Length: 132
Image 1 (tube, rainbow, N blue to C red):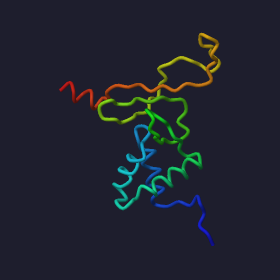
Image 2: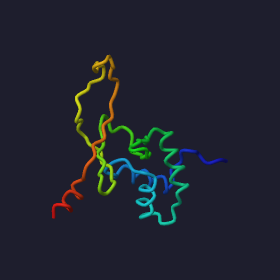
Image 3: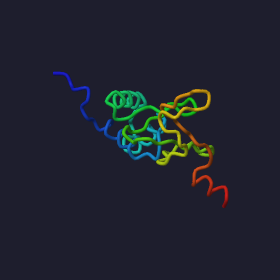
């Protein structure tokens, strides 16, 4: 009897929880570092396999920011990201800074279907550290 591909394992559960609890999309190394707090022997190959499986199941999806693939839970609805230029963390923004509804015709005849926005600057922790 072979094991089900979608069976739950402690490693998968921890990795899924790490992504669910994150303040924004995480890079593979971030997932590995955070998951190792519960599973010190966790290997990077297991993280890659689990991210692939969770993506195939539609539980998470990849986000490319500055050429780096990060992962976040699916089902968050329309949202954008803030990337801290000081610490490198990426945060999910739950409000849209741009009013471009689907179907808007942009000058030149471009018809908007969707948009992605990433704002860059210093997160509250880094902004506070520099003003102290």
